[in-house]
Image (cartoon, rainbow, N blue to C red; front, side, top):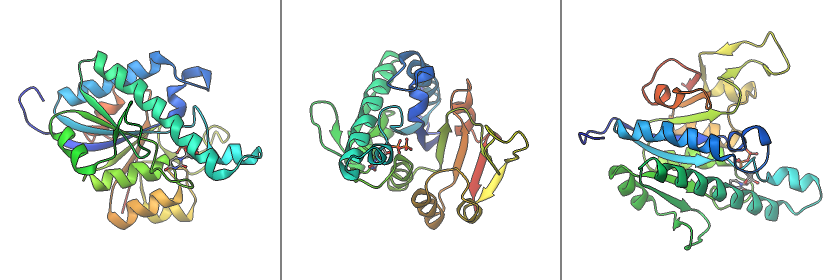
Length: 240
Ligand code: UDP
């Protein structure tokens, strides 16, 4: 922060779909700029922020597989898609005057650093945003799992999951069921047994086994990223 104090370290998982704006595909620079502005504000307030961005605005491996492609290769396409989101966010963070580094799980030296955990932590300590790209670098995994794993490895105090168009976890899909009820808080076990849409099961069990709290909140509501890092009562908190 401006006075050098650290307010906390968080992992922010951003919906790839949100990056597309209304378009559904690709990157809408206006949306990315808006998100960058909000991240810049919390960094200026002294929070250390690491970011993982989904890739649903480009490719999902499972969807390409359904249309006849090899799963592993499709997953690599999915991972490469996430890197474009990372570069877009980096660009707008720079325009906001915030230093950032992209670190990718698949090496591509011209555009990003390789994933080096200790170096990522050093960047965070220096007030740089670290954006992790290309998922875990492994097919059959998700960016939710990546966000949980990276959060643990850099010792983040919580995983903040910014969702597109939904403000928390519900007992059924609020887009199709008008009577769906939102949870203020939830246990990991309930998320798994009721198959609630927080993140994939691999990500949830990783958080459960290591007691990493997850806050699910709506990403594109102005001020929500700041509310999330300050621990205000928004969204749904998943813990023990
Ligand atoms: N992906 C992968 N390994 C990872 C992270 C992502 O194979 O560690 C691929 C996978 O194909 C996924 C795509 O990248 O569908 C986009 O990632 P994301 O987690 O955003 O998928 P979504 O949640 O949008 O389905």
